[in-house]
Length: 266
Image 1: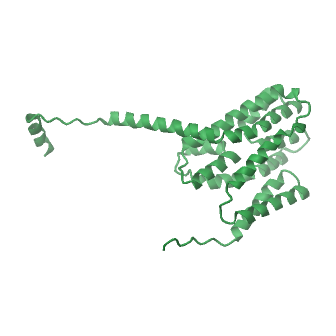
Image 2: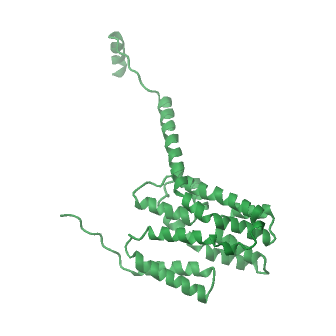
Image 3: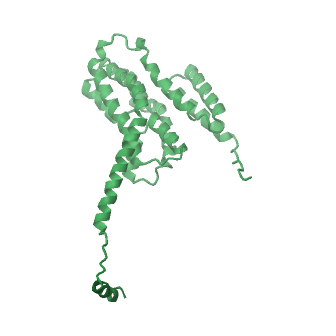
């Protein structure tokens, strides 16, 4: 029927201008690229405070690694492949001792056990992403990206790969730069711990925790987790207190009854 109408339209001078799929696709790609760039920049800006707060740890790790006999290449390689400040610090302590390799692995796993919980929580929010994007996101998963992703989700905003990439790239790239600077110039600081600059990161984490204070049962879970962590630090020692405190909070949260949703109908 359309074929019979087309000649009639041509006779009366009516021509239809149809956008080709190629033009439409190019336009959509242009808009999508601009949106992704904006999301990436927004993610990088979001992670800027965490980057500043973690800078002393990156510098400190680079300096301590050189003091423990690492070369600059080995120091940077560890930051590139491990990308976990606490685990890298534990590794420095254990590599210099005659410790069995399996004990080093177990110790680092204990420090990073919380990442298992992070990935389980974040995974449900990015399950629709392609597999390679999920894998890359889990590689750069750390405390700040996880906390910022949870905060963004609570605000009702969508967690896009571009935004998360901005968060992860800002933290990852700056961590490598800080490691390199610490490895090169760390010897200029005779007593690095005496400066007290490593206190910036706990302050940042405290701010992140306080950001979730509106969640149900936030206070008892935080108190129990903190108390268990401090007790484990005295009785068991580092780094196990991190995982023990987290598990204590999880057990309490699982034991508490679910909070029923409030009926907002008048």
